[in-house]
Length: 284
Image (cartoon, rainbow, N blue to C red):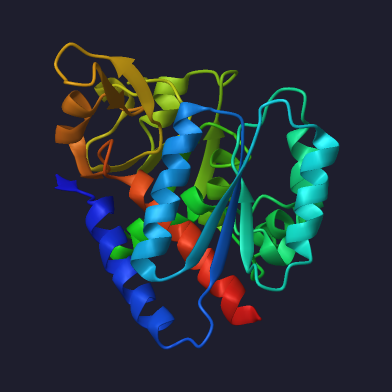
């Protein structure tokens, strides 16, 4: 079993980007909009700020109160769309319930949509055209490529059909060049264990702690664990620990490759956002 070290790969990729940025006259600029006081969102935005500083990007976080109206947020997006100094920006999700997330995403200029959520970027991705690909799926592809994991003709099962991970990664892996035969599973899938046990590559992206057990994984499978759930723990100083969607201790011995949680896909999500921002700056 080989442990896929997302943290090490991300560090290497950030160094490569840092070298590119050092030779640029104008440093790439990334802005994050944070609405409300969600703890997980604050943590994630903090990671992005640190990554920008490491690579040499200019970054800014615009914070808004939880009662900010949809109209106010749309006005801010319009400003960023028209700000020539901003290469890319993201709206940290989730947003407060009174704001329609899709309306907000649709308002972003696709050329600055470094999260890859705008319908224009999603559509281009599905067609195999150049696009900003959402960060987590892009990070998964980078890990597969870095570890020279063969995907051509392999059976890939994706558990989860979210627009952020499940749907895009299933589309990407089916494109020419990756050439997987992809099955997407969800809450209504019948015989889920049987379907998963046929997978050469299993991507778990449903957000349910330790859902995937050893009887769902065949010997020699590649397992990519996207899930991350915070659970109470008496064994840590802070009183909690992070679990993935895969029951790691019992699944790992059966795998050829597996990502840990934390330290697997997570760091690659951040670095992929950075790569999209660098690409946006270069396109200018």
